[in-house]
Image (cartoon, rainbow, N blue to C red; front, side, top):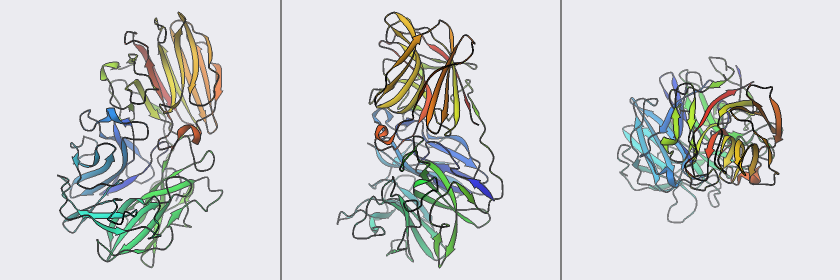
Length: 494
C-alpha cells in the first residue's frame, strides 16, 4: 500500500516508537520548548494524533535554564508488562527515566539515570533491564556503552561497558542514538553516525550476547548522502518496531530540504518497511523516500486542519521554557495574553509566547486579535519563530504614541515594514509555502490586504538547526503594565 513521508510533519526529530498490543506510541525531541516530549498514538503506523506530553508539570525539570537548542534531547519510549517507560537527556540535568501506565494521563517525576552520554535507550530482556548511551570508555573514543539498570530508581546494577565503537571502529564520528534489540538469537545494535546533517546515517551491528562483542554490518543500512533526487536528506537516528502482523518497520528522522540538507521545518519523522536478509535488517534501496510502498493495513488519511479549543491548554501548544501561567487566560472562546517584559529575543527569557509546530510546508495560520496598546514598545501578534536569534514578528505595535501594523525580523538583513493601525479587531494571516510566507491583514472584517512576502529562515539563520519553525502568538512590552491581547487562532492545511 502506498503512503507518503514524513508520517509526522514539522519539527519532530529523534523519533522513538513502541507497540502495546495494536496501538503504537511515538515520542520526539522538543529542546527548549515546554511541555516536553510530545507523545503520539496510532493504530496503523501512518495516521498519528498527539495525545499528550511526557513533561508537562513545572517542577519536573528546570526549563528556565534551557537555552536555544538545549533542553530536551532524544527520548526513547518502551513498553513492558503494562508500563510505559521514557528516557531522555535534559541538558544541565542529565539522563533520566519516567514511567506511566497511560501515556495520555501523565507521567512520573524523573529519576536520574546513573550513566552519562546522550541519546539513552532501554532494553527489557529476560527479566533484566539494560541502559544504553554513547558514553565513552577509558580510551576516550566515541563509543556505545551498556549497563544493567533499575528503571524505577535509575540505579545501575552493573558497571557500564563499552560494547561498540561504530562502523569504522578506530575513528568513529558522531556516534549516537543507540538502540539494542533482542530479535531471535541475536542482539542487534542500531546507531546513528556522521552527524545530523547531510552525512547522517544509520549503522548496525549484532552479537550473540548483550554485552558483545558486536560485529558491524559493514555499511550503513540507511542514508541519503548518496541518494539524489529523492526529496529527502539527512536520514538517520532510527528505531525499529515489529507490527502485530509480524512485519518490521523503522522510523527515523530526515528533512525535506530547502537546499543542501536543511529544511526550515526542521527534522521530521519518516517510516520505512524493513526486511531481513542473512539475519541483517535491510531497508529497501538503503535510502529514504517521500512516496513509499509497504505492507500497511489501513490507508493514510489527509491531515485535518487544527482548531484551537480555548477551554483548556491543548497538548499541541508550546511555550518557550517554563511559562508564566498568569499571562495566559483560556476563556472558552478566546485566549487572553498579557504582554511580558521578557521578549522573544531574551536568550533565557520566559516571554508570553504560545506557538504550534508549523504543520507542513503549505499551511495557513490566521489570528483574530483585539489589542490596542497604550504604552510605547508594547506589541502583540503572530511570530514565525526558529529561535531567540531568528524570527519574524507580525503585530500591532505602539511607537511614538501611535499604533502601527508592523513586520520585523530578528537575524539577517530585513527592512522593517509598518502601516498605521486602526483601533479594534485585526485579522493577521500567514500563508506558508515551501519558499515563502505571505503576510496579509484585514481591519474590522475588511477584505484581506497583502502586507509583504518574506522568505523562510536558512541554515545560516538557524545555526545547528536542531529545532524547526513554529508559528504562534506572542505579546510583549517594556513594562509589565500593558492590558491583555484577546486572540483566536486557526490553522488550515491544503
